[in-house]
Amino acid sequence: MAVMNDLRTMKNAAWLGWQMEANWADPFLFATYSIVKPISATLILVFMYMVVTGGNTDNPYFSYMFVGNALYMYVAEVLFGVTWVIHDDREHYMTLKQVYIAPINFYAYILGRSAIKIAITTAGVIITLVFGVLVLGVDIFLDDVDWLLLLGSVVLGMGCICVLGLALGGITFLTARHSIGINEGVAGVFYVMSGIIFPITALPAWAQSISKVLPITYWMDSMRRAVMPDAMAELSTAAATDVTGLGGVSDLYIMVYLAISTAVFFALSLGVFRFADGVARRKGKIDWTTAY
Amino acid sequence: MEAAVETKSLSRVFEPKKKKEGKSVTALDSVDLRIEGGELFGLLGPNGAGKTTLLKILSTLLLPTSGKAYVAGLDVESQFSAIRQKINMVSGGEISGYGLLTVKENLWMFSQFYGIKSKVALQRIDEMLKDFGLSEKKDAKVRTLSTGERQKMNVIRGFITDPDIIFLDEPTLGLDVNASRVIRSYMIDWLKDHPTKTVVLTTHYMVEADELCDRIAIIDNGRILACDTPERLKKMVKMNTTLSMDVTRLKDAAVLGSFSGVENFTFTEDGDKGLTRLRFVMRDESGVSDIISAVLSQGSRIESLQKTEPTLEDVFIKMVGKGLE
Image (cartoon, chains in turn orange, green):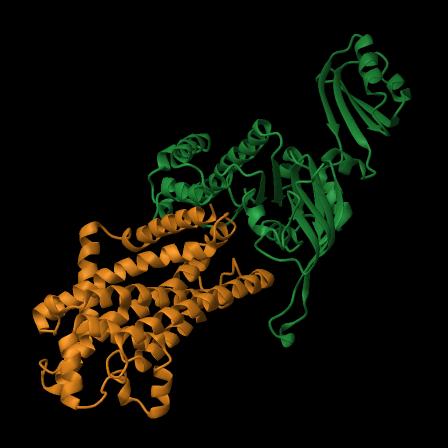
């Protein structure tokens, strides 16, 4: 019964999330925005790369960077999005207390809202990758894609990013607008340390040690292995060394690592969320307004 | 019988973020309260009295610092999930609502959080929008509503879930007379239709509290100063009732001052209108019927009659030492 209630809450929260994300413009404008936004964001990095390398998009590093940058949208959007849901409901729409006192699992509510963020981000990631393949020659070939690895990576990776976002969402209960800065900071750490646009081997040894603990590092690597196996192999061969930092790690190891870290972060995020919820209720921060 | 709401030595202290930022504020100080099912209970007090803090604790938004609070017999600290299935809350003076959704969508969404079947919810939404005169705004985006319309929508949101206990925090704050009247009469009708349900209302408005509430608690500085029916509260003020009467010319007005309960009696003749103006200051109302009989037995006719009693405002001033405004 409780599970059914949570699923119903997630469904309703997802419906609300979709209305909030898509209802601000007419469908044509929204569709245009959804296509233009991720491509534009990616083109900034593409132009920077071209200026530095003299337009050498044939190098497998270009595909490495392009795919990493596209997939990073998940990290940024979900981490930022979960925080924004709480911040926006509480301070802008002033509905957080109304939702909070409803007989629902608030954690399920946030998961539902996050699910829509993931769905919309997925569209952005696919649009960006298709643009990369068709226009910029990014090394993704459907015949070479390891679909099983891709499916496993997507499921575990999304789960991991989601629970990370929920932990940060719990912290948002206790902070005002600063929570957005915290999330940008955390997302920034992943951007630098998880091999998003450059391999972790470019980092100093101490930073590489940290990188090899972060689940996002493993997720990025498994996603690249799944969608661009040839380019990844070419990168390692060309450098004749472990250029990505996880060259000696098997696909299975990565999946197990992702599964364990997702489970650990899930328990951690539930704990953080409940703790933060209790503190917020004790300190009277559920209906706090500071920014508007 | 189990109380709808019960508090025992309930206190809430807000500590400053940093010690140098000032002293702690005691919002509630050992509040003992018992509200029975079926009551329309009012909390009357000035700004900062602790009304909203009490409602926040009862609606599981805030934890007490000490003491106990029970809603429908359930502890607000440990059984908050069960409480949430039985309550709802509406705050006045807010502009809450998802502006991108329509009125109907907003109400429907909240009804779904309470597990109401979609078809039932949509039917209730239609009925309630009609009751509140908002039918025409059903498909309007919430961001386009006026303050009063938003407030009405929020009141509907509170009642649509059919709670056992509803907490209304200044629901008519800042609204015009018509909007306030609609909300007040809905509350009364709702309790008539659902006699076991409970409304806990905070208000600034004396008349609202006097007219609506079965019982009223006067609260100031976090303490309950008095709690009783409006009639009994008024009797706490030692103020005499004044009876003013205009009657057609009396043959013998002086005799009226001798009836029981009359403390002071004066009369004046209004020759132009052919009236005798009578003014009685009454210790109690035991002699009122005798006075009227005496007037009528002299062949006189009563043109007007006005009774002035102590108001809730007199009670409030006596208890708190100042008025609300």
